[in-house]
Length: 21
Image 1 (tube, rainbow, N blue to C red):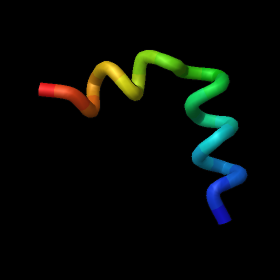
Image 2: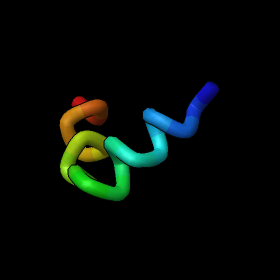
Image 3: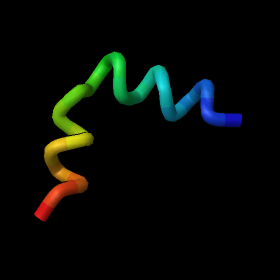
Image 4: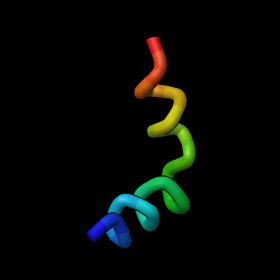
């Protein structure tokens, strides 16, 4: 499930920026 992933994004929005080059 992506619930854990959603929580990670909510707690650390910066992970989205790190995913980008």
